[in-house]
Length: 113
Length: 114
Image (cartoon, each protein chain N blue to C red):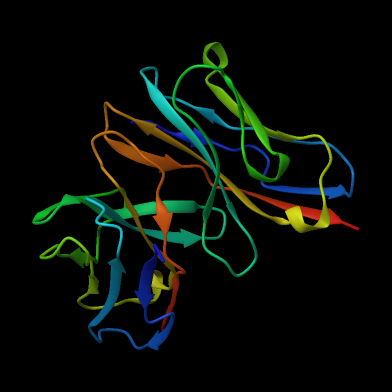
């Protein structure tokens, strides 16, 4: 079975600090990778996605993620966080073999002004 | 406006009293899914549907039922709710389940079972 690990459960940063959230998955075949964001009291929204091609993908609000196939990783980054980035972030993996999507357990990011 | 709607948004009920949470999408999506979100466990898939009359179990289907009689609707049924089903539930849809597209999520239903 495929699995997704997000090792950082709760991250606290000051505004302007750089962010990197880890995501590792277990499936060895072709995968599609996603990061979703859930702002307080809201539903999940797509932040960015990787299907193929350039392994460095850019999403909304200055976020980017790098797919490293050899490390089974898809880490999320942002050079300078803002207070408005306070949210919970979920990594998700879709594998054609299973025809299903698996979400990680989420990382809560708190940005202090 | 393209959206996924869920009703009710909040529900408090008692053990054993059957309930249904409705989910509807207006994007003509084939794939629909139900998740529950619990602290520290992330989102776990309950059931999904690849199309009308095609449903399958996700990772945590026990205690739940679903049906997909129409493309736009995918209700979640709890025949006999128990306190361990207290959770935040999300419905989601995507264009197709055979090649993955991003999922669009509903606003969530917070269920408390006493």
